[in-house]
Image (cartoon, rainbow over all chains, first blue to last red; front, side, top):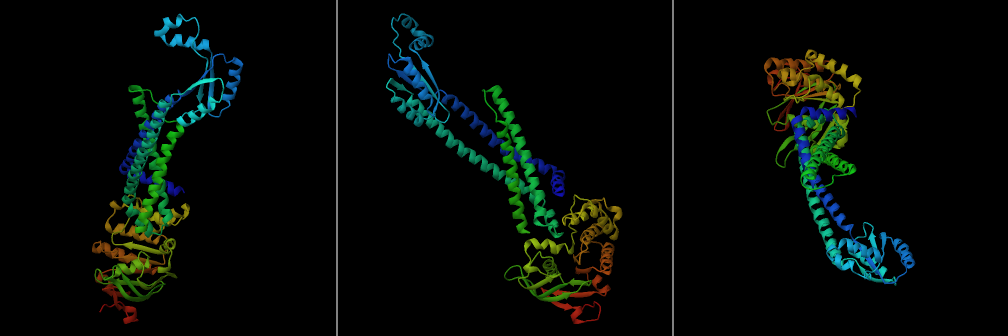
Length: 285
Length: 231
């Protein structure tokens, strides 16, 4: 084991330029993947911000007793899709209208009778904020006799759904393309390293080294290069994030486990690419 | 110890590198494999260290039938052999000592035993003082001695030398050859492929001559009891 570690580390010392080149190449390949991930992450966050505003409003029939409304609230609260139910009384509705509809202030101020109905404002849990779930909840709400009207902005919701679908498909396609490109680039880079040492591999075999013995330092070296490239990619991504966050718009960076995933992805790729290259190479000699 | 029985080796359909080669080399023997370039000397050696396998016939080395060896068994065979080449095949970025130690490390030898063994063989080839030199700092003859030390360090049954003096000037060549003779004198069999007939004529060792892949002369068969006298 110590021999494997020593040989792997020696490889960095013996060919520092090639090692640095490999790590940089891996870093840039993963940087692009990571950058795309950041864009996707921030897009999703923006979409979630919009989604949070998805709400169903149930307008109550005039004269619905508060006790009935209160009982309904606890019923609705028990729906698995429902996050929160707010009861807006007629007075509160008027108060809000006065506050929010400044241009009608004169008109609203002169009212003798409050024309606005009381309502229940229902927000949904994440994952239930698409057209289908909203429609299902709305249908169930129609069963309440006091419900005069139910509104939830169907057109707007359908547009949001489409946007979400397109973002998902495009994201997956581009993400996969970037990932495949990085796999090819990293594979080629590692292969260069193996070919660089083909003479050494041939000599190892001549003196009676087993394939496993020859392979192990290469696997470790590949994994280390991948990990170093991954770490560098995260650092580059962070620099890109800080720049955009300061100069362009407010954005978010990966959570630590997500950043770790990039490093692990690099490590796994480096390891796998080494395994394939060395196996192919050993087969030929 | 090494037995070729009706060995044919074809690299492609029309090119036969060896044709119907049969011979037996006993423990402790010194044998020259001679012949022109392309006569099949290197192929014969490659068949011994299982780099190549016979197209037909059988090659038996130290009890192993090479064509029946699993890939994982080849290293075990090679550890019983020492192999030396014309171009030395040293690792340029390791010192003489590290090059020799490497052959022990790959066998999983214990660390504490490696150092003394390496120094012993380096002393045997006369290079103890240059243990820390890199190949580029050594002359051709010295590099070949390092290669021989590496081949010896696992106490091989047989030393295979493919044109070991081919890249050396006459003085260095004589030195390396003398070293091989000394090694043989201590009990290790040596098979040396060469086209240096001068060397061959000066010594009483067995000669197997190949021509276009076939054995045309084997002093042990054709002139038993006699020294190496080329026809």
